[in-house]
Length: 326
Image (cartoon, rainbow, N blue to C red; front, side):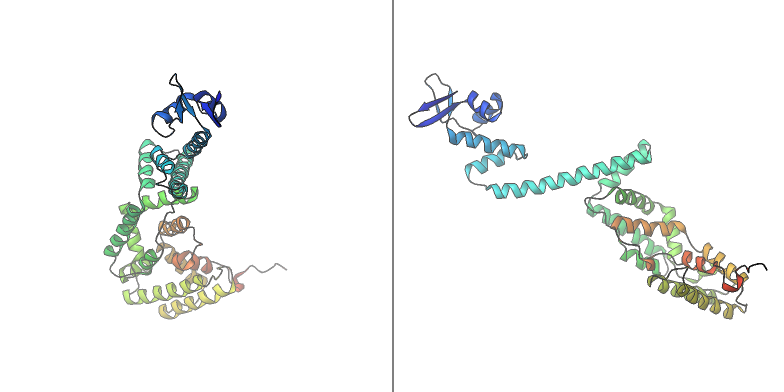
């Protein structure tokens, strides 16, 4: 109940509680801690508060509602910290909490879809909890290890350094899932070896793809195919389109001339099978995961060329299409 002291309206703790909805015990705590000192006390020792104290209590309640700590509230009320400063600091802290909660939500959704074992759950939590610096060290170690395994700096190694996966602080479900799969690949020694084999442009790898052909010749043939297909892919050439046909016809003509074989369906099928043998779908999967993590559009020039050229090689040529029956 409010009382009058001259021209000043005073409020008891019960009256403050009724006006603000704050429990009496909370008001008493604020008062005892010095955040809300009483304006005066009655002869019986009861605390009374004026309208300024009522406003002060409402300020405390708003700041507490915004999760501002009591020490900061004390400084705001004491004038050593402005509301602007405390709001900015707590806005940043709140943004961090939101990012943490969103990432936690993404992890939970991924776990629900994946049906992981306890071991996988622990591993995934560790991967998703890495700091930005820790993630960068994991990726850099992967690239450095690949470079050390590779005798020459192949195009895939250069692409790795260009396409550096960078998980955002607030990833989507798809980005988080891609990062987990990507990190699993980067920490797998078998995949590192496979990536190194695909990244090397050295003659032995080309010799494996084109068995029975001298190393220098195999390297020349693969270089021509890799360069022609890579340029076409970078330009966005559709493997079903005429531009792709012209490019691959040129590659086939080079193979035919070097090998002394006619441009035929048999040669094209042999080339297609050899390019397939030299392509690792898991390596391609790596690059596609990077694109998802970075939220980039797929850049064809950073993807393996073999699937593109195989698709063109196996398209029926005009003179091979079935003729209508008379």
